[in-house]
Image (cartoon, rainbow, N blue to C red; front, top):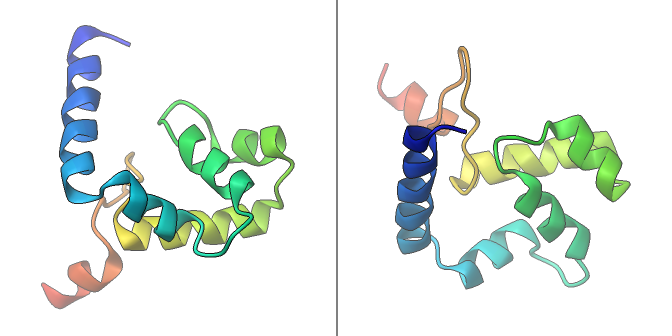
Length: 97
């Protein structure tokens, strides 16, 4: 990771923490008690760990993890970035058309 990428990640983390305090993130990531694996999965969403690897590391069902990620993206606590990926929830993209 180069210096620019490191700085951009730090800026994003700082802004995110102002928007979503950790207590709120925990409620979104694991709305029911006993969600330690969900919290661990969230912490592995660092941009370097593929979704399949997260599921494998934590022994999570790939379908459940995929649904959790979709929920987190929709809530705005995870951003999927890449070719043809949009960091805004679908409801906002549709409302602008």
